[in-house]
Image 1 (cartoon, rainbow, N blue to C red):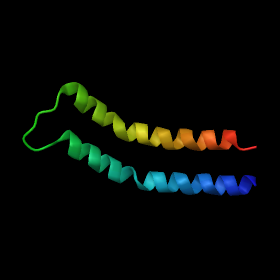
Image 2 (image 1 turned 90 degrees about the vertical axis):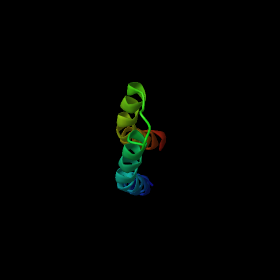
Image 3 (image 1 turned 90 degrees about the horizontal axis):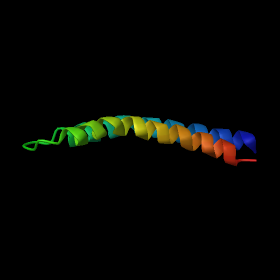
Image 4 (image 1 turned 60 degrees about the vertical axis):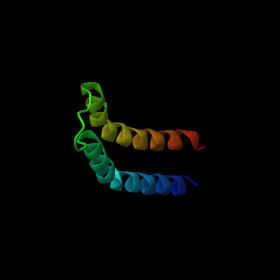
Length: 69
């Protein structure tokens, strides 16, 4: 049972990390729109989006391990 859980977590982490370039590209596109000046606060929050995405993947894996018995 535990091996199946670990394999599932590894697959979800690999898929999540494979999406990181897509998230970074989307964040860069949102940060540099054509003809629009973004407020400084919004630009700063967009910089953090990729870090939050990776943190959610890792915390979800840890929570999944902790929830299995």
